[in-house]
Image (tube, rainbow, N blue to C red):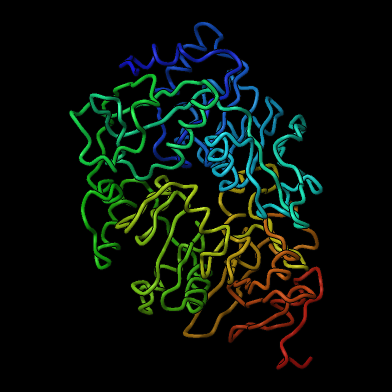
Length: 509
């Protein structure tokens, strides 16, 4: 039977050595008060210590002095297993200092491993991850030098087919953020942007005789409907009521509490950008890439658009009339609306449906998308892509590996180089005024996020769209498919590549 407690009382239930699983998505829907209560307890007592923390998509709030950052930095955590670390500025720095073990697994594979554990199965099989960094025959999931545990990802063969087997530590504590608890402890998510892995995390903790702690905004007599009670009260041990911080009305567009027609998406996006500082001036190169990339969309496509340059696609999809004829999706579980960006990435404006995250990755893993648009840090001569690891920096793979593994058409959106690049456009004519000092096309990528060999084997169409040209993946590597008007193929492309590429049939040197 659940009890209503203060955050400090609820956190006192956690023991040294527990494995905590947090339900959040990058920077949204994080049970901040529970994290900060854990930090207060650790500061006073140096307990709980030797913790393992698991989260499919990370659990920061973009502030190194809030949420879990303090107790992680102080030494309470021995192991961290996440899909993404982008919203955890302090944590991702000290990971590279070998302060504790840290492992990066594809977001969807963590989600499915949690669901498996909820059903009493130790782990989950997946084709996702084969031949990229997480494959133990390449690098494995360890981020730093002390992260050498080989139990999280193994190569297995089932019916003569090769899979990766993802296995998590036994979850003993679930930490969840919900909207409301009723008098029987049932937890609803009415005002939440997503439910994520909430139910599976709770079921996994209870299957391991663990505890479930839920932070809610309020207590109500009953949920609006039984279907809205995502977590049944019989799974809940402690409920912490924490009045939510006041938020601008723009955030209400993300809760699904009222209908937002297609025509109003842009207006609500502008309101959100104004209060989240997500708005930023886009370069000419980004506009060129967005305009060209939007031409790849087809009516009735089911689509995932990544963050960064790929976000430009929606602007040009609206201009060419395609935005109202495609279905956009986001990893956290939203379908049929417009994905938000910046600090509220993972939420959706005007979603038609928001379901559990594991179900979204069921769709992605079996090729249920028609096309996806992703960013890239590096591309090599074979078409392999690094999208998760820069020099001395690490954000994590997130859902990238799941999204690109089986989608029939994969489009990478990237500038040809960076750090100082200047490009001009006059009508259809593109002029490279100054090249950047950091190349994006390299002999060997630093780490593999996307395997070209797998893509060729799967028969996927893969494009690499830049501000000056387009490459396509072939069995032999990259082929130059298009050169934009005004671009000198030799000076602006071939002379800058550290490898040879197949040339268009129309090109004669």
